[in-house]
Each structure stands twice: as structure tokens, then as C-alpha cells.
Length: 258
Ligand SMILES: Nc1nc2c(c(=O)[nH]1)N[C@H]1C(S)=C(S)[C@@H](COP(=O)(O)O)O[C@H]1N2
Ligand SMILES: [Mo]
Picture (cartoon, rainbow, N blue to C red):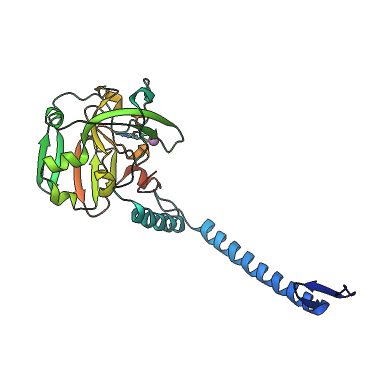
């Protein structure tokens, strides 16, 4: 059995001399200094970057975009939000966000569906109510940190697309939606839009949609955060490019998926 001798240390099976230890300590310290300097440089670069108007810093934007690519890879129609019972739904539904919600709308409202540039059809609330009704009860989440189980009824978006012969449009990558006054707008990826829980909602808690909840029609897209559930849809269009998105312009993640 080996005993420790002064000036020698045992490391695993081999023994190291004090010189070797000094050399290794120096090496470890150099590696630390190099890594630390690189970290400082990276931070300084990030910190000194000028913010771009209406956007986050370029480096952060690149990270966000890399995240988006990852997310969109994993997004699929099979994703479903957890469902709840109607009795779990809040009676007193929180109202949040009122951009593009000035005044009140009535039955003269029509949904404008831009099938292709220059080819727009008008759809009334009664037209939508004539389609099969789908209901969803899910945990509505806002990026501000609150969530609430809520119950919505309307037309499944995929049903709407099929009934209106919008198969070509369904093959595009995105759906854009805009309020009638054009002040709030969102873009959603087609796989999430065609997910079976996504509905064009005209009811809440089994009643006509209240004005502040987006009467006559709003989007309910349970796989996304609240920012994507546009209230008071005026116009809808389809494209392979990302439609403009209000909160994306403020620096939020484009997909805002859960
Ligand atoms: N037109 C419009 N739709 C909107 C918003 C908005 O400001 N304007 N806010 C969004 C946000 S951030 C959330 S959390 C939900 C809130 O929906 P609620 O008012 O039904 O709770 O609506 C979304 N849809
Ligand atoms: Mo929100």
C-alpha cells in the first residue's frame, strides 16, 4: 500500500509532482481567464448594440429567430391544449386589450376574406352560424402572467376553410387577421390555425360574444398565448410570408406558442 509522501499528491492511479500541479493550475487558470474574457466581450457586444426602432437588439432578435425555427419544427396539428369542463369555465371573464375595439359593432358587420389579392368575399355572422358549431373550454393564458379557464363557441377554422373551398389558401404558411380599424393585427402559422381547437368564435359561455370580448367574431387559438386571439376580426388573408403582427413588432416571439 502506498503512503502519501511530502511534496507528492495522489490523483487517481498516478502521482503528481508539485511542478505538474503548478502547471495544471496555471493551465486551468488560463482557460478560465480566456472563457471569462470571451464572456465579457460577448456581453459588451450585446450591451453596446444600438436598439433597433420598434424591435429588440439584433443579437437577441437572432436568438428569437433561431427559437422560432425550432418551435415551428415541433409544431404540428397533433398538438392540443388541455380541455376542461364547461362547469370549470369562469362566469366573470376577464377583459384584456382593447386595441382596435373603439365603439360597438352591429349586424351590418361582414367578415372580409381575401382569397387572393383583389378577390375578397364577404361573410355575415348568420353565414358563419349556419356552419357546424364547435365549442372549446381551455385555460386562456396571457403573456402578462394570468390565465383563466374560458368557454367559447363558433366555427372550427378548418371547417370554415373547407366549406368555403379555400383548399389552395390552406396550403399557404400563414393566416393574417386585422381589426376593422386596422390598428390590431396578428399572424398565425397555418398548422396552428388548422389545429381542431382553433375556432372563429361568436359565443362565450353559451351566449353571443360580448362587445368587449370581440363581438361579432374573434379568434380562439388555444395553442397560443392571448396576444394571438384577435378580437373583432375585420379582415382575413393568407400568405407564405409572415403577416404583420402587432406584438411581434414590440419584440415578442412571432409564434407565441404555449
Ligand atoms: N382587437 C384586439 N384583440 C386582442 C387584444 C387587443 O388589444 N385588441 N389583446 C389580446 C390580448 S393581449 C389578450 S390577453 C386577449 C384577451 O382577451 P379577453 O379580453 O377576451 O380576455 O385578447 C387579445 N386580442
Ligand atoms: Mo394578453
